Amino acid sequence: MARMQKIVVLGGKTFREIHQLIEDINASGKHSYEVTALLDDNEELHGTNICGVTVKGPLSKVHSYPVDTVFAMAINNNKRRIQRMDILRNLGLPLERFPHLVHPSAVIDPSTKIGHGTQIYQFCTTAPGVCLDEFCMISPYSLFALDCIVGKGVLTGARVTVLGNVKIGACSFIGSGSLLTESIVIGPAAFIGAGSVVLQDVHSGHFTMGNPARQQIRNIQVPEDLLETDKKYVKKLFL
Image (cartoon, rainbow, N blue to C red):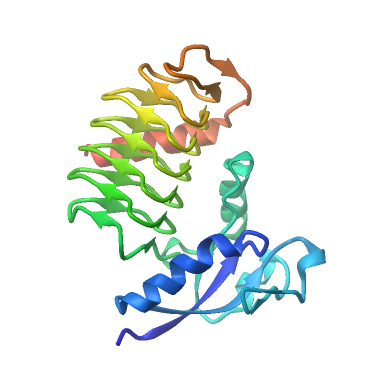
């Protein structure tokens, strides 16, 4: 039986999304987590109970927990995909306190690199050479083929298929049921609408959707530090 480890989840309103993931990991016997608290900056949630766990205060309380307590990010709203990285940076916690969480039904190739804080949900698959940076959330039934590179904070909907040698930039969102074809590049903070078939590169901060996805609309300004972080991650992989 795995040693029980205390874990605090950041994001009370969306805790239900990660609750089953943690329960299933515990049931598998590969690891054992005890969710001791939820933290959320929404004062209306303070003191409330979600899935049997109490929201004990704002995110700033992370520093009141012992060093052997770990954390999980449940702030996974695609509209806040850049803001969630700012939240993590402002909290200033060591990356080592955010374990990656992988559902026992996922088929993960042994060569796959998984960053701190990344969550992989039910029945996902990765092929050899896949790299998932920190704080990604990969929703159920998603597949990543050979040598895909997924940047920090990428979020996907369910049943996303990413074919070989695709690069997805940091803080991008890939909508449910989308297909990304071989060797394309999705720029940082891009947004791909649900059910899209993407045949060409998508620019940073741009929105696209459709089958095939054609028109691209720039809908957000991508911070320079995010672009730089993305470049450094790719460079590190090929050193």
